[in-house]
Amino acid sequence: MKNLLPYLKPYRKECVIAPLLKCTEALVDLFVPLLIARLIDEGIGTKSTSVIITIGLELLGLAALGLIIAMIAQWFSAKAAVGFSSKIRSVTFKHIQHLSFQSADTLGQSTLITRLTSDINQTQTGINMTLRLLLRSPFIVFGSVIMAYQVDPGSAWIFLLIVPLLAIVVYGIMWITIPLYRKVQGKLDKVVGISRENLTGVRVLRAFNLQQHETEEFDERNNALTAANVIVGRFSALTNPLTFLLINLATAVLLYVGAIRVNIGNLTQGQVVALLNYMAQILVELVKLANLIVTITKSIASASRVSKIIDTPSDMAYPETSEAPFEDGSVTFDHVTFTYQGAGAPSLTDVSFTARSGETIGVIGGTGSGKSTLVSLIPRFYDATEGSVKVSGHDVRSFTESDLRSHIGPVMQKAVLFAGTIRENMQYSNETATDEEIWEALELSQAAEFVRGKEDGLDEIVEQGGRNLSGGQKQRLGIARALVRKPAILILDDSSSALDFATDAKLRQAIKNLPYPHTTFIVSQRISSIRHADHILVLSETGELVGDAPHDELMKTCDVYREIYKSQYKEEPVNA
Image 1 (cartoon, rainbow, N blue to C red):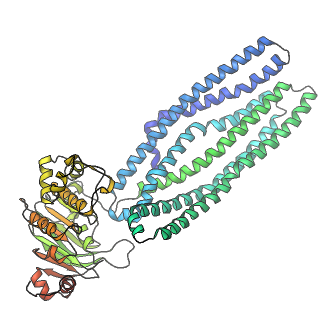
Image 2 (image 1 turned 90 degrees about the vertical axis):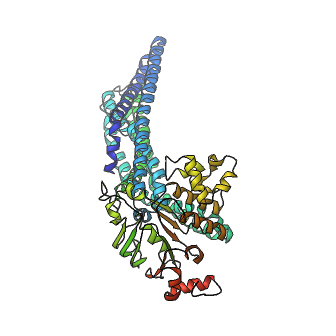
Protein backbone atom coordinates (compact mmCIF):
# COMPACT_ATOMS: atom_id res chain seq x y z
CA MET A 1 0.00 0.00 0.00
CA LYS A 2 2.96 2.33 0.55
CA ASN A 3 3.39 2.80 -3.18
CA LEU A 4 -0.05 4.48 -3.32
CA LEU A 5 0.84 7.22 -0.83
CA PRO A 6 2.91 9.30 -3.30
CA TYR A 7 -0.32 9.93 -5.24
CA LEU A 8 -1.58 11.90 -2.23
CA LYS A 9 1.32 14.36 -2.49
CA PRO A 10 -0.53 16.79 -4.80
CA TYR A 11 -3.16 17.03 -2.07
CA ARG A 12 -0.85 17.61 0.89
CA LYS A 13 -2.51 20.95 1.61
CA GLU A 14 -5.96 19.36 1.69
CA CYS A 15 -4.69 16.48 3.82
CA VAL A 16 -3.43 18.95 6.43
CA ILE A 17 -6.24 21.53 6.33
CA ALA A 18 -9.14 19.06 6.47
CA PRO A 19 -8.09 17.29 9.73
CA LEU A 20 -7.11 20.63 11.34
CA LEU A 21 -10.51 22.10 10.54
CA LYS A 22 -12.24 18.98 11.88
CA CYS A 23 -10.23 19.31 15.10
CA THR A 24 -11.26 22.98 15.27
CA GLU A 25 -14.88 21.90 14.87
CA ALA A 26 -14.30 19.35 17.65
CA LEU A 27 -12.90 22.09 19.88
CA VAL A 28 -16.08 24.09 19.31
CA ASP A 29 -18.14 21.05 20.33
CA LEU A 30 -16.13 20.65 23.52
CA PHE A 31 -17.20 24.09 24.75
CA VAL A 32 -20.91 23.30 24.34
CA PRO A 33 -21.29 21.26 27.59
CA LEU A 34 -19.66 24.09 29.57
CA LEU A 35 -22.22 26.55 28.19
CA ILE A 36 -25.02 24.11 28.99
CA ALA A 37 -23.70 23.83 32.56
CA ARG A 38 -23.79 27.64 32.87
CA LEU A 39 -27.25 27.71 31.32
CA ILE A 40 -28.52 25.34 34.01
CA ASP A 41 -26.66 26.80 36.99
CA GLU A 42 -26.69 30.52 36.17
CA GLY A 43 -29.78 30.80 33.98
CA ILE A 44 -32.37 28.20 34.81
CA GLY A 45 -31.23 27.84 38.44
CA THR A 46 -31.55 31.60 39.05
CA LYS A 47 -34.46 32.07 36.60
CA SER A 48 -32.48 34.76 34.80
CA THR A 49 -34.03 35.31 31.35
CA SER A 50 -31.19 37.50 30.14
CA VAL A 51 -28.60 34.84 30.98
CA ILE A 52 -30.69 32.15 29.25
CA ILE A 53 -31.02 34.28 26.10
CA THR A 54 -27.33 35.23 26.10
CA ILE A 55 -26.11 31.65 26.51
CA GLY A 56 -28.71 30.43 23.99
CA LEU A 57 -27.35 32.85 21.39
CA GLU A 58 -23.82 31.73 22.20
CA LEU A 59 -24.87 28.11 21.61
CA LEU A 60 -26.45 29.07 18.26
CA GLY A 61 -23.26 30.91 17.32
CA LEU A 62 -21.13 27.87 18.14
CA ALA A 63 -23.48 25.67 16.10
CA ALA A 64 -23.23 27.97 13.07
CA LEU A 65 -19.44 28.21 13.41
CA GLY A 66 -19.14 24.43 13.68
CA LEU A 67 -21.33 23.94 10.61
CA ILE A 68 -19.27 26.33 8.49
CA ILE A 69 -15.99 24.73 9.59
CA ALA A 70 -17.38 21.22 8.95
CA MET A 71 -18.52 22.13 5.42
CA ILE A 72 -15.12 23.60 4.53
CA ALA A 73 -13.35 20.56 5.98
CA GLN A 74 -15.65 18.25 4.02
CA TRP A 75 -14.82 20.08 0.79
CA PHE A 76 -11.07 19.71 1.35
CA SER A 77 -11.31 16.03 2.33
CA ALA A 78 -13.57 15.22 -0.64
CA LYS A 79 -11.20 17.02 -3.01
CA ALA A 80 -8.25 14.99 -1.73
CA ALA A 81 -10.12 11.66 -1.75
CA VAL A 82 -11.65 12.06 -5.21
CA GLY A 83 -8.44 13.43 -6.71
CA PHE A 84 -6.42 10.58 -5.18
CA SER A 85 -8.80 7.88 -6.42
CA SER A 86 -8.98 9.46 -9.86
CA LYS A 87 -5.19 9.41 -10.14
CA ILE A 88 -4.95 5.85 -8.81
CA ARG A 89 -7.63 4.67 -11.24
CA SER A 90 -5.81 6.34 -14.12
CA VAL A 91 -2.42 4.91 -13.10
CA THR A 92 -3.85 1.43 -12.57
CA PHE A 93 -5.66 1.44 -15.91
CA LYS A 94 -2.53 2.67 -17.68
CA HIS A 95 -0.47 -0.03 -15.98
CA ILE A 96 -2.96 -2.70 -17.03
CA GLN A 97 -2.73 -1.43 -20.61
CA HIS A 98 1.02 -2.07 -20.53
CA LEU A 99 0.83 -5.51 -18.93
CA SER A 100 1.72 -8.36 -21.23
CA PHE A 101 -1.01 -10.75 -22.29
CA GLN A 102 0.64 -13.33 -20.04
CA SER A 103 0.37 -11.12 -16.96
CA ALA A 104 -3.21 -10.10 -17.78
CA ASP A 105 -4.19 -13.74 -18.29
CA THR A 106 -2.67 -14.65 -14.92
CA LEU A 107 -4.45 -11.88 -13.01
CA GLY A 108 -7.80 -12.49 -14.68
CA GLN A 109 -10.20 -9.97 -16.18
CA SER A 110 -12.75 -10.15 -13.35
CA THR A 111 -10.03 -9.34 -10.80
CA LEU A 112 -8.85 -6.36 -12.83
CA ILE A 113 -12.40 -5.02 -13.20
CA THR A 114 -13.12 -5.39 -9.47
CA ARG A 115 -9.93 -3.59 -8.49
CA LEU A 116 -10.51 -0.76 -10.97
CA THR A 117 -14.03 -0.16 -9.66
CA SER A 118 -15.04 -1.55 -6.26
CA ASP A 119 -11.60 -1.56 -4.64
CA ILE A 120 -10.66 1.97 -5.75
CA ASN A 121 -14.09 3.30 -4.70
CA GLN A 122 -13.61 1.68 -1.29
CA THR A 123 -10.15 3.24 -1.02
CA GLN A 124 -11.63 6.64 -1.88
CA THR A 125 -14.22 6.29 0.88
CA GLY A 126 -11.49 5.31 3.33
CA ILE A 127 -9.38 8.37 2.49
CA ASN A 128 -12.36 10.69 2.83
CA MET A 129 -13.46 9.26 6.18
CA THR A 130 -9.89 9.18 7.48
CA LEU A 131 -9.33 12.86 6.79
CA ARG A 132 -12.64 13.76 8.40
CA LEU A 133 -12.73 11.53 11.46
CA LEU A 134 -9.41 9.85 12.19
CA LEU A 135 -8.12 12.85 14.16
CA ARG A 136 -11.47 14.36 15.12
CA SER A 137 -12.81 11.36 17.02
CA PRO A 138 -9.71 10.79 19.20
CA PHE A 139 -9.50 14.57 19.69
CA ILE A 140 -13.06 14.60 21.04
CA VAL A 141 -12.42 11.53 23.20
CA PHE A 142 -9.26 12.85 24.84
CA GLY A 143 -10.61 16.39 24.87
CA SER A 144 -13.69 15.21 26.74
CA VAL A 145 -11.47 13.52 29.32
CA ILE A 146 -9.48 16.75 29.81
CA MET A 147 -12.62 18.90 29.97
CA ALA A 148 -14.20 16.48 32.45
CA TYR A 149 -11.11 16.83 34.61
CA GLN A 150 -11.50 20.63 34.42
CA VAL A 151 -15.15 20.35 35.47
CA ASP A 152 -14.59 17.91 38.34
CA PRO A 153 -11.30 16.10 39.02
CA GLY A 154 -13.10 13.82 41.47
CA SER A 155 -15.24 12.30 38.66
CA ALA A 156 -12.61 12.30 35.90
CA TRP A 157 -11.24 8.89 36.96
CA ILE A 158 -14.30 7.30 35.35
CA PHE A 159 -13.24 8.75 31.99
CA LEU A 160 -9.64 7.65 32.49
CA LEU A 161 -10.84 4.10 33.13
CA ILE A 162 -13.34 3.77 30.28
CA VAL A 163 -11.24 5.14 27.39
CA PRO A 164 -8.51 2.41 27.48
CA LEU A 165 -11.20 -0.30 27.71
CA LEU A 166 -12.95 1.12 24.66
CA ALA A 167 -9.63 1.32 22.77
CA ILE A 168 -8.98 -2.38 23.47
CA VAL A 169 -12.42 -3.31 22.08
CA VAL A 170 -12.10 -1.18 18.95
CA TYR A 171 -8.54 -2.16 18.02
CA GLY A 172 -9.10 -5.82 18.90
CA ILE A 173 -12.00 -6.05 16.46
CA MET A 174 -10.00 -4.22 13.80
CA TRP A 175 -7.10 -6.68 14.20
CA ILE A 176 -9.49 -9.60 13.62
CA THR A 177 -11.45 -8.14 10.71
CA ILE A 178 -8.68 -6.77 8.43
CA PRO A 179 -7.60 -10.20 7.05
CA LEU A 180 -11.25 -11.28 6.83
CA TYR A 181 -12.10 -8.33 4.59
CA ARG A 182 -9.28 -9.35 2.24
CA LYS A 183 -10.94 -12.76 1.87
CA VAL A 184 -14.28 -11.08 1.21
CA GLN A 185 -12.81 -9.06 -1.66
CA GLY A 186 -11.25 -12.22 -3.11
CA LYS A 187 -14.64 -13.95 -3.13
CA LEU A 188 -16.14 -10.84 -4.71
CA ASP A 189 -13.68 -11.34 -7.60
CA LYS A 190 -15.17 -14.77 -8.22
CA VAL A 191 -18.73 -13.44 -8.23
CA VAL A 192 -17.76 -10.67 -10.66
CA GLY A 193 -15.96 -13.25 -12.81
CA ILE A 194 -18.92 -15.58 -13.20
CA SER A 195 -21.28 -12.61 -13.71
CA ARG A 196 -19.12 -11.26 -16.50
CA GLU A 197 -18.80 -14.70 -18.08
CA ASN A 198 -22.56 -15.27 -18.00
CA LEU A 199 -23.46 -11.86 -19.39
CA THR A 200 -20.92 -12.26 -22.20
CA GLY A 201 -22.16 -15.75 -23.09
CA VAL A 202 -25.86 -15.27 -22.39
CA ARG A 203 -26.89 -16.41 -25.89
CA VAL A 204 -24.89 -19.62 -25.62
CA LEU A 205 -26.43 -20.37 -22.21
CA ARG A 206 -29.94 -19.94 -23.54
CA ALA A 207 -29.18 -21.88 -26.68
CA PHE A 208 -28.13 -24.90 -24.59
CA ASN A 209 -30.73 -24.28 -21.87
CA LEU A 210 -28.07 -24.07 -19.14
CA GLN A 211 -29.61 -21.19 -17.19
CA GLN A 212 -30.36 -23.42 -14.21
CA HIS A 213 -26.83 -24.83 -14.10
CA GLU A 214 -25.27 -21.36 -14.24
CA THR A 215 -27.74 -20.06 -11.67
CA GLU A 216 -26.70 -22.82 -9.29
CA GLU A 217 -23.01 -22.08 -9.85
CA PHE A 218 -23.61 -18.36 -9.30
CA ASP A 219 -25.58 -19.13 -6.12
CA GLU A 220 -22.70 -21.25 -4.87
CA ARG A 221 -20.17 -18.45 -5.30
CA ASN A 222 -22.61 -15.82 -4.08
CA ASN A 223 -23.36 -17.89 -0.97
CA ALA A 224 -19.62 -18.19 -0.32
CA LEU A 225 -19.34 -14.39 -0.54
CA THR A 226 -22.37 -14.02 1.70
CA ALA A 227 -20.93 -16.44 4.27
CA ALA A 228 -17.63 -14.54 4.31
CA ASN A 229 -19.50 -11.26 4.77
CA VAL A 230 -21.59 -12.77 7.57
CA ILE A 231 -18.47 -13.93 9.43
CA VAL A 232 -16.72 -10.57 9.20
CA GLY A 233 -20.04 -8.81 9.87
CA ARG A 234 -20.49 -10.71 13.13
CA PHE A 235 -17.15 -9.52 14.40
CA SER A 236 -17.79 -5.96 13.22
CA ALA A 237 -21.27 -6.04 14.75
CA LEU A 238 -19.72 -6.60 18.18
CA THR A 239 -18.26 -3.09 18.10
CA ASN A 240 -21.44 -1.10 18.76
CA PRO A 241 -22.97 -3.27 21.53
CA LEU A 242 -19.67 -3.61 23.38
CA THR A 243 -19.03 0.12 23.06
CA PHE A 244 -22.54 1.00 24.23
CA LEU A 245 -22.27 -1.47 27.10
CA LEU A 246 -19.07 0.09 28.40
CA ILE A 247 -20.33 3.65 27.92
CA ASN A 248 -23.66 2.94 29.63
CA LEU A 249 -21.87 1.31 32.56
CA ALA A 250 -19.62 4.35 32.79
CA THR A 251 -22.68 6.64 32.60
CA ALA A 252 -24.35 4.74 35.44
CA VAL A 253 -21.23 5.02 37.57
CA LEU A 254 -20.95 8.72 36.70
CA LEU A 255 -24.56 9.36 37.75
CA TYR A 256 -24.00 7.52 41.01
CA VAL A 257 -20.77 9.36 41.81
CA GLY A 258 -22.19 12.69 40.57
CA ALA A 259 -25.32 12.35 42.73
CA ILE A 260 -23.20 11.77 45.82
CA ARG A 261 -20.96 14.76 45.03
CA VAL A 262 -23.96 17.01 44.33
CA ASN A 263 -25.52 15.91 47.59
CA ILE A 264 -22.40 16.88 49.58
CA GLY A 265 -22.06 20.15 47.67
CA ASN A 266 -18.88 19.40 45.71
CA LEU A 267 -20.65 19.47 42.35
CA THR A 268 -23.53 21.44 40.80
CA GLN A 269 -26.38 19.99 38.76
CA GLY A 270 -25.13 21.82 35.67
CA GLN A 271 -21.69 20.28 36.08
CA VAL A 272 -23.22 16.78 36.29
CA VAL A 273 -25.08 17.46 33.03
CA ALA A 274 -21.82 18.69 31.50
CA LEU A 275 -20.04 15.49 32.54
CA LEU A 276 -22.88 13.41 31.07
CA ASN A 277 -22.61 15.41 27.84
CA TYR A 278 -18.91 14.71 27.68
CA MET A 279 -19.62 11.02 28.24
CA ALA A 280 -22.25 11.16 25.47
CA GLN A 281 -19.73 12.83 23.17
CA ILE A 282 -17.27 10.04 23.87
CA LEU A 283 -20.00 7.50 23.07
CA VAL A 284 -20.93 9.16 19.76
CA GLU A 285 -17.33 9.60 18.69
CA LEU A 286 -16.36 6.05 19.58
CA VAL A 287 -19.29 4.70 17.58
CA LYS A 288 -18.10 6.87 14.69
CA LEU A 289 -14.55 5.67 15.28
CA ALA A 290 -15.69 2.05 15.29
CA ASN A 291 -17.51 2.51 12.00
CA LEU A 292 -14.53 4.44 10.67
CA ILE A 293 -12.23 1.57 11.57
CA VAL A 294 -14.49 -0.85 9.70
CA THR A 295 -14.35 1.46 6.66
CA ILE A 296 -10.58 1.90 6.98
CA THR A 297 -10.18 -1.86 7.35
CA LYS A 298 -12.06 -2.40 4.09
CA SER A 299 -10.16 0.36 2.32
CA ILE A 300 -6.78 -0.94 3.51
CA ALA A 301 -7.66 -4.39 2.16
CA SER A 302 -8.86 -2.81 -1.11
CA ALA A 303 -5.83 -0.52 -1.36
CA SER A 304 -3.45 -3.44 -0.91
CA ARG A 305 -5.23 -5.29 -3.74
CA VAL A 306 -4.92 -2.25 -6.02
CA SER A 307 -1.29 -1.91 -4.97
CA LYS A 308 -0.60 -5.50 -6.00
CA ILE A 309 -1.84 -4.72 -9.52
CA ILE A 310 0.45 -1.68 -9.76
CA ASP A 311 3.32 -3.73 -8.32
CA THR A 312 2.80 -6.51 -10.86
CA PRO A 313 5.60 -5.98 -13.39
CA SER A 314 5.05 -6.70 -17.03
CA ASP A 315 7.14 -9.72 -17.96
CA MET A 316 7.85 -8.00 -21.26
CA ALA A 317 10.48 -5.25 -21.45
CA TYR A 318 10.95 -2.98 -24.47
CA PRO A 319 14.07 -1.01 -25.39
CA GLU A 320 13.85 2.78 -25.29
CA THR A 321 14.81 2.97 -28.96
CA SER A 322 14.70 0.34 -31.66
CA GLU A 323 18.04 -1.27 -32.38
CA ALA A 324 17.31 -1.38 -36.13
CA PRO A 325 14.75 0.13 -38.53
CA PHE A 326 11.68 -1.81 -39.62
CA GLU A 327 12.41 -2.31 -43.32
CA ASP A 328 10.07 -5.02 -44.62
CA GLY A 329 7.46 -7.57 -43.54
CA SER A 330 9.65 -10.68 -43.46
CA VAL A 331 9.11 -13.03 -40.51
CA THR A 332 11.40 -15.78 -39.22
CA PHE A 333 10.75 -18.33 -36.47
CA ASP A 334 13.98 -19.92 -35.24
CA HIS A 335 13.34 -23.07 -33.15
CA VAL A 336 10.49 -21.42 -31.29
CA THR A 337 8.87 -23.18 -28.34
CA PHE A 338 6.12 -21.51 -26.33
CA THR A 339 4.36 -22.61 -23.13
CA TYR A 340 1.56 -20.68 -21.46
CA GLN A 341 2.10 -19.94 -17.79
CA GLY A 342 0.75 -22.81 -15.71
CA ALA A 343 0.28 -25.07 -18.73
CA GLY A 344 1.46 -28.65 -18.50
CA ALA A 345 2.82 -28.86 -22.05
CA PRO A 346 4.07 -26.47 -24.75
CA SER A 347 1.54 -25.00 -27.17
CA LEU A 348 4.27 -24.69 -29.82
CA THR A 349 7.27 -27.00 -30.06
CA ASP A 350 10.47 -26.22 -31.96
CA VAL A 351 8.80 -24.28 -34.80
CA SER A 352 11.09 -22.91 -37.54
CA PHE A 353 10.08 -21.22 -40.82
CA THR A 354 10.73 -18.08 -42.86
CA ALA A 355 8.12 -15.86 -44.53
CA ARG A 356 9.57 -13.43 -47.06
CA SER A 357 8.13 -9.98 -47.53
CA GLY A 358 5.20 -10.03 -49.96
CA GLU A 359 4.27 -13.67 -49.35
CA THR A 360 0.94 -15.01 -48.17
CA ILE A 361 1.29 -17.63 -45.46
CA GLY A 362 -1.52 -19.99 -44.54
CA VAL A 363 -1.67 -21.51 -41.06
CA ILE A 364 -3.79 -24.59 -40.45
CA GLY A 365 -4.06 -27.41 -37.95
CA GLY A 366 -6.42 -29.13 -35.59
CA THR A 367 -8.19 -27.42 -32.71
CA GLY A 368 -5.67 -26.54 -30.01
CA SER A 369 -2.66 -27.00 -32.27
CA GLY A 370 -1.34 -23.48 -31.52
CA LYS A 371 -2.32 -21.58 -34.67
CA SER A 372 -3.43 -18.43 -32.85
CA THR A 373 -0.48 -18.73 -30.48
CA LEU A 374 1.92 -18.78 -33.42
CA VAL A 375 0.65 -15.53 -34.96
CA SER A 376 0.41 -13.90 -31.50
CA LEU A 377 4.18 -14.16 -31.19
CA ILE A 378 4.73 -11.95 -34.26
CA PRO A 379 3.39 -8.68 -32.75
CA ARG A 380 4.92 -9.85 -29.48
CA PHE A 381 1.71 -10.35 -27.56
CA TYR A 382 3.72 -13.12 -25.91
CA ASP A 383 7.44 -13.86 -25.82
CA ALA A 384 8.77 -17.20 -27.01
CA THR A 385 9.79 -19.52 -24.17
CA GLU A 386 12.67 -20.81 -26.29
CA GLY A 387 14.09 -19.71 -29.64
CA SER A 388 13.53 -16.36 -31.31
CA VAL A 389 10.98 -14.59 -33.51
CA LYS A 390 12.36 -12.12 -36.05
CA VAL A 391 10.63 -9.51 -38.17
CA SER A 392 12.40 -7.48 -40.82
CA GLY A 393 15.47 -9.59 -40.03
CA HIS A 394 15.68 -8.54 -36.36
CA ASP A 395 14.49 -10.07 -33.11
CA VAL A 396 11.08 -8.68 -32.11
CA ARG A 397 12.58 -7.85 -28.71
CA SER A 398 14.93 -5.33 -30.34
CA PHE A 399 12.04 -3.02 -31.39
CA THR A 400 10.15 -0.53 -29.26
CA GLU A 401 6.51 -1.40 -28.77
CA SER A 402 5.28 1.39 -31.05
CA ASP A 403 7.81 0.64 -33.82
CA LEU A 404 6.84 -3.03 -33.84
CA ARG A 405 3.07 -2.75 -33.51
CA SER A 406 2.69 0.20 -35.92
CA HIS A 407 3.79 -2.04 -38.82
CA ILE A 408 1.53 -4.98 -37.93
CA GLY A 409 -2.22 -5.19 -38.51
CA PRO A 410 -3.70 -8.02 -36.43
CA VAL A 411 -7.32 -9.11 -36.81
CA MET A 412 -8.22 -11.20 -33.79
CA GLN A 413 -10.09 -14.49 -33.81
CA LYS A 414 -13.04 -12.79 -32.13
CA ALA A 415 -14.07 -9.53 -33.75
CA VAL A 416 -14.00 -6.76 -31.12
CA LEU A 417 -15.60 -3.40 -31.84
CA PHE A 418 -15.91 -0.50 -29.41
CA ALA A 419 -18.84 1.75 -28.62
CA GLY A 420 -18.78 4.73 -30.96
CA THR A 421 -19.16 5.35 -34.67
CA ILE A 422 -17.82 3.24 -37.52
CA ARG A 423 -15.35 6.04 -38.30
CA GLU A 424 -14.04 6.06 -34.74
CA ASN A 425 -13.57 2.29 -34.81
CA MET A 426 -11.63 2.54 -38.06
CA GLN A 427 -9.40 5.26 -36.63
CA TYR A 428 -8.30 3.00 -33.77
CA SER A 429 -5.52 1.72 -36.01
CA ASN A 430 -4.74 5.10 -37.60
CA GLU A 431 -5.87 8.26 -35.82
CA THR A 432 -5.17 10.45 -38.84
CA ALA A 433 -7.01 8.27 -41.37
CA THR A 434 -9.16 10.30 -43.75
CA ASP A 435 -12.65 9.27 -44.86
CA GLU A 436 -11.17 8.40 -48.25
CA GLU A 437 -8.67 5.99 -46.66
CA ILE A 438 -11.40 4.49 -44.51
CA TRP A 439 -13.67 3.88 -47.51
CA GLU A 440 -10.75 2.33 -49.37
CA ALA A 441 -10.21 -0.12 -46.48
CA LEU A 442 -13.95 -0.84 -46.32
CA GLU A 443 -13.98 -1.62 -50.05
CA LEU A 444 -11.05 -4.02 -49.64
CA SER A 445 -12.69 -5.80 -46.69
CA GLN A 446 -16.01 -6.12 -48.58
CA ALA A 447 -17.71 -3.98 -45.93
CA ALA A 448 -18.38 -0.83 -47.97
CA GLU A 449 -21.73 -2.02 -49.30
CA PHE A 450 -23.39 -2.59 -45.93
CA VAL A 451 -21.85 0.58 -44.45
CA ARG A 452 -23.29 2.63 -47.33
CA GLY A 453 -26.62 0.99 -46.57
CA LYS A 454 -26.56 2.49 -43.08
CA GLU A 455 -28.50 5.72 -42.65
CA ASP A 456 -25.52 7.61 -41.19
CA GLY A 457 -22.74 5.88 -43.14
CA LEU A 458 -19.41 6.26 -41.31
CA ASP A 459 -21.25 8.07 -38.50
CA GLU A 460 -23.44 5.03 -37.82
CA ILE A 461 -23.35 4.16 -34.11
CA VAL A 462 -21.70 0.88 -33.14
CA GLU A 463 -22.89 -0.38 -29.78
CA GLN A 464 -20.52 -1.88 -27.23
CA GLY A 465 -18.99 -5.08 -28.60
CA GLY A 466 -20.73 -4.42 -31.94
CA ARG A 467 -23.89 -6.13 -30.70
CA ASN A 468 -26.02 -4.26 -33.24
CA LEU A 469 -24.06 -5.90 -36.10
CA SER A 470 -23.99 -9.43 -37.43
CA GLY A 471 -20.96 -11.69 -37.02
CA GLY A 472 -19.91 -11.24 -40.66
CA GLN A 473 -20.28 -7.46 -40.48
CA LYS A 474 -18.14 -7.31 -37.35
CA GLN A 475 -15.44 -9.44 -38.95
CA ARG A 476 -15.32 -7.31 -42.08
CA LEU A 477 -15.09 -4.10 -40.04
CA GLY A 478 -12.31 -5.67 -37.98
CA ILE A 479 -10.38 -6.48 -41.17
CA ALA A 480 -11.01 -2.96 -42.51
CA ARG A 481 -9.67 -1.48 -39.28
CA ALA A 482 -6.41 -3.38 -39.74
CA LEU A 483 -6.17 -2.36 -43.42
CA VAL A 484 -6.58 1.35 -42.58
CA ARG A 485 -3.10 1.13 -41.03
CA LYS A 486 -1.61 -0.23 -44.29
CA PRO A 487 0.51 -2.71 -42.35
CA ALA A 488 3.66 -4.41 -43.55
CA ILE A 489 2.44 -7.58 -41.83
CA LEU A 490 -1.27 -8.42 -41.91
CA ILE A 491 -2.48 -11.17 -39.58
CA LEU A 492 -5.94 -12.65 -40.18
CA ASP A 493 -6.54 -15.00 -37.26
CA ASP A 494 -9.54 -17.02 -38.47
CA SER A 495 -11.15 -13.64 -39.04
CA SER A 496 -13.34 -14.66 -42.01
CA SER A 497 -15.07 -17.66 -40.42
CA ALA A 498 -18.46 -15.89 -40.52
CA LEU A 499 -18.13 -14.96 -44.21
CA ASP A 500 -19.60 -16.94 -47.06
CA PHE A 501 -17.22 -18.53 -49.57
CA ALA A 502 -17.83 -15.92 -52.27
CA THR A 503 -17.16 -12.97 -49.94
CA ASP A 504 -14.15 -14.77 -48.49
CA ALA A 505 -12.71 -15.28 -51.96
CA LYS A 506 -13.24 -11.61 -52.90
CA LEU A 507 -11.59 -10.55 -49.65
CA ARG A 508 -8.52 -12.73 -50.22
CA GLN A 509 -8.16 -11.48 -53.79
CA ALA A 510 -8.43 -7.84 -52.64
CA ILE A 511 -5.79 -8.37 -49.96
CA LYS A 512 -3.48 -10.11 -52.43
CA ASN A 513 -3.73 -7.10 -54.77
CA LEU A 514 -2.97 -4.45 -52.14
CA PRO A 515 -0.90 -1.66 -53.76
CA TYR A 516 1.85 -1.75 -51.13
CA PRO A 517 4.30 -4.50 -50.05
CA HIS A 518 2.92 -6.66 -47.26
CA THR A 519 3.17 -10.13 -45.77
CA THR A 520 -0.12 -11.82 -44.94
CA PHE A 521 -0.71 -14.58 -42.40
CA ILE A 522 -4.08 -16.31 -42.77
CA VAL A 523 -5.12 -18.61 -39.96
CA SER A 524 -8.10 -20.68 -41.01
CA GLN A 525 -9.86 -23.99 -40.62
CA ARG A 526 -10.89 -23.86 -44.28
CA ILE A 527 -8.61 -25.33 -46.90
CA SER A 528 -10.29 -23.04 -49.45
CA SER A 529 -9.10 -19.94 -47.54
CA ILE A 530 -5.41 -20.88 -47.62
CA ARG A 531 -4.88 -23.30 -50.52
CA HIS A 532 -3.60 -20.54 -52.80
CA ALA A 533 -1.11 -19.22 -50.23
CA ASP A 534 2.57 -19.14 -51.19
CA HIS A 535 3.18 -21.73 -48.52
CA ILE A 536 1.12 -23.26 -45.74
CA LEU A 537 2.22 -24.00 -42.19
CA VAL A 538 0.64 -27.19 -40.85
CA LEU A 539 0.63 -27.70 -37.07
CA SER A 540 0.06 -31.02 -35.32
CA GLU A 541 -1.96 -31.47 -32.15
CA THR A 542 1.24 -31.14 -30.10
CA GLY A 543 2.12 -27.78 -31.69
CA GLU A 544 4.87 -29.12 -33.95
CA LEU A 545 5.34 -27.83 -37.48
CA VAL A 546 4.70 -30.91 -39.64
CA GLY A 547 4.30 -29.15 -42.96
CA ASP A 548 5.66 -26.02 -44.66
CA ALA A 549 4.97 -25.98 -48.38
CA PRO A 550 2.38 -24.97 -51.02
CA HIS A 551 -0.93 -26.84 -51.21
CA ASP A 552 0.02 -29.27 -53.98
CA GLU A 553 3.19 -30.39 -52.26
CA LEU A 554 1.46 -30.80 -48.89
CA MET A 555 -1.13 -33.06 -50.48
CA LYS A 556 1.70 -35.39 -51.40
CA THR A 557 3.88 -35.16 -48.31
CA CYS A 558 1.81 -34.19 -45.24
CA ASP A 559 -0.59 -36.69 -43.66
CA VAL A 560 -2.11 -34.11 -41.29
CA TYR A 561 -2.92 -31.77 -44.17
CA ARG A 562 -4.44 -34.58 -46.25
CA GLU A 563 -6.68 -35.58 -43.34
CA ILE A 564 -7.95 -32.03 -43.00
CA TYR A 565 -8.52 -31.89 -46.75
CA LYS A 566 -10.47 -35.17 -46.75
CA SER A 567 -12.72 -33.90 -43.96
CA GLN A 568 -13.72 -30.92 -46.14
CA TYR A 569 -13.77 -32.38 -49.65
CA LYS A 570 -15.37 -35.58 -50.87
CA GLU A 571 -12.64 -36.29 -53.35
CA GLU A 572 -8.91 -36.06 -52.88
CA PRO A 573 -7.26 -34.91 -56.09
CA VAL A 574 -3.59 -35.17 -55.34
CA ASN A 575 -2.69 -32.45 -57.84
CA ALA A 576 -5.46 -30.02 -57.02
